[in-house]
Length: 78
Image (cartoon, rainbow, N blue to C red; front, side, top):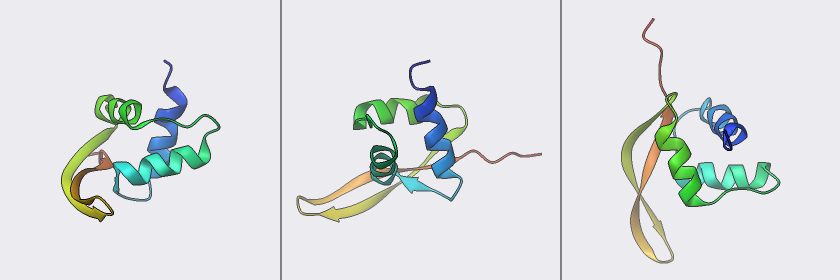
C-alpha cells in the first residue's frame, strides 16, 4: 500500500466536489512533502474504488487547448 496516504488526500480533496486531474495534482504537491507525479496520480485515481471518472473538460493554456479528465467521489445509492 504505497499510495495509502495519497489516496486519502485525494478522497479528502474530492469531498468539495468534482475536480480535474491538474487541480488534484497541484493540491497534492502543495500538501505533501514529496508530492507526486501525473502518472502515479492517474493510476491512483483510476484504480481507487471510491473515486469515479467523469467526462472530459477542455482547458486552455500557453501550449494550446487540451482535454483533461474530471474526477469525483462515488455517491452512495442507499
